[in-house]
Length: 378
Image 1: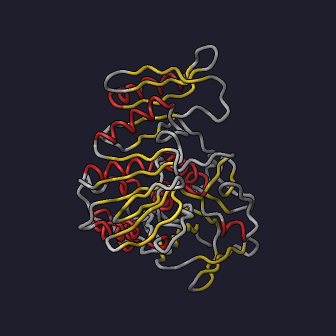
Image 2: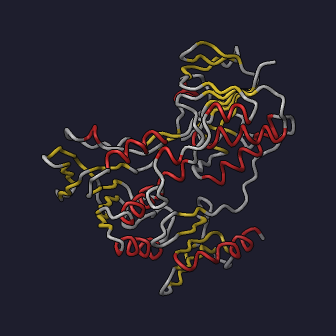
C-alpha cells in the first residue's frame, strides 16, 4: 500500500499528521522535510525574546520522537526535487518515493528585499527555526535594529525587540502599520503605542541600499534619508512556495490552487497551509491552517470533508497595544465605523444596512472580539 506522503515539517505538515493519526492509526504516512524535522510553532519566533526563549528552547520534539509518537516515517534533510504525477512518485535528493496521496505543505518564502549595496547579502529574514537562531546570534551584544516592513510580522518583531531594549527603526511603505488590515485610526494607535516603547517609524518609505560601515550598516531610504543599524531584518512579506507544483503541471496562481477539498488540479495531490490558495484565498495564519488540517485528515482517511472556515480573527502579538482584526471579505461594500477611546479603538466594517462584515479592535477593545464573532456568525 503506497503511503500518504506529506512534504514539509512546519506547523501545517505536522498538524495534518497529528489529525490523521486521531482518525487512523494504521495507514502508512511518510513526512519528508528538507530540515531536521524538529517540531516547533513558527508564530512563536516573533515574540521569543519577550518569552525568554532561545531557538533551542523553541524546538519541541525531535523528528525521531515525532515519528515514534505518531507511528510515521519521517525523512529529514531530504529535498523533494520533482513530482511525477502520472507515476505517483516524488523525486528526492536521496531517490524516488511512491505515494498514494501526496500533500504539499511547503510553506512560503520571504519576498526578496530588493536592496542594492554590498551589505544587501547580510540582511536577515526569519522564516524558520534556523533563521531565528542566526538572527539571535546576529543581535547578541548589538543595539540598533532596522526592520523593513510594518506588516504583521514586522510589528511583532518591532515590539519584541523594543521591549528587550533594542533601538528599533521600522521602514514601511504604507502610511500606517498593517494598512491592508486596519483602518487608519487603529493603525495609528498601534504605531503610537510602539513609538512610546521606542520604535522609530519611517512611513511611506522603502529601503534603497545597504552598505557596510566600520561598526554596522548604513541604510539609505528612497528619499535619501540614512539610518545606521547593527542588524537589518527584512519582514516585507511572504510568497507561497509554488515552484515544485508548477514544474509538475499543477495549477498555481498566488499559491497552489485548490478547491475546498484541498485537492489540486491533479488527482491525489493536495496542498495546505501557507503554500495553498484555497478557492482564491491565501490565508497565511494559524487558525485557517488548523481548519484545513482537520478537514484534509478526514478526506484522506475516507470521509470527504470540504474546508469550512468559521469567523477567524487575526491576533497580532503586540503587547504594547494588542490588535484583533477580522477583515471584511474582499470586495465587500460598506465602510469602517470607528470609535476611539483612551485605551483602544473599536472599528466595525458595516454594509449600507448596518450589518457587520468585519472588525478591527485594539488595546482594551480586543476583549469584544468574541461577542462580535457571534454577531458575524449570526
